[in-house]
Length: 329
Ligand SMILES: O=P(O)(O)OC[C@H]1O[C@@H](O)[C@@H](O)[C@@H](O)[C@@H]1O
Image (cartoon, rainbow, N blue to C red; front, top):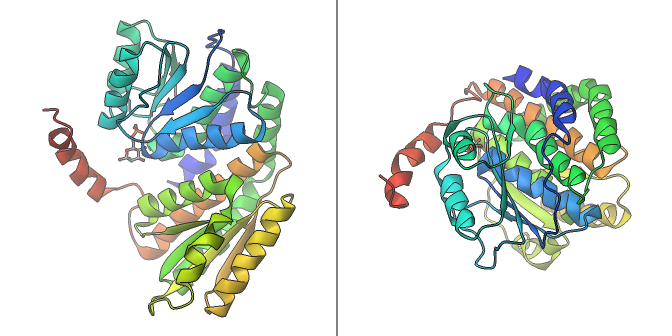
């Protein structure tokens, strides 16, 4: 599975090649992105990037639900790597009733057919990988449409730079992933992925990667919200084992001071800490670099623990029951 992560350079190249292949110029009120799991996190990344320098609100749903206020003036991305995820298909149906401009991002499946039947712009994603490992391609698919439709969050040249940056940092990412997986394996217990608000999507992604690939639960904490609730839990925690992975954007001064504060509280509870400084000069570069380190680390941890990083048995169990839960036979 490591090769699927090392294939990210090729995915970004493909995303750059497709950049601008779908354009939907128009006057939109907001962007709404629906998807689950490895596809849903793509919406979180776009929203995180848009918080930094976007010009239009970006809302994300990782559910079958869509907001009541969605309407004709909105731009909707339906993202499902497989094209078959039930919640995402229901979200598509609910969104379509409200007649927004829809774009489908997928590699296959029912959503590809729905796009063809309904004349919906479709961005094809590379086939044959695990959904969670198609993150860079799905991300560039959306950023490319927004850039060429007048709502740029990331320009083509910034996307090229991020591709180059990741290419130049693969070796470093592999080394860091090795260190991080050894750190988690050595300390066992519950890993806590902690950071400052702008990088919340990255720690959620990391959690999801360690869940799916390494088969462990993970806790996520984000400062400064962390300072207003979780911090009190460390006054008298149960005697469980924890380890903390603190992710830092070296150019974020307030963020660094906040995570330093978190560090002190974790250290006073004797929690071992691993710190990851994100490489890159732009926020996109840092997000991609951090995602690669966390993805590779989660696969390496799976190898150390002797589990199959690709298999997700409990999700299969859920998928069997999901149609009943959602009233679909
Ligand atoms: O990404 P799609 O294909 O919509 O699937 C949605 C999600 O399903 C889950 O069960 C996992 O396998 C995720 O990695 C995946 O991303």
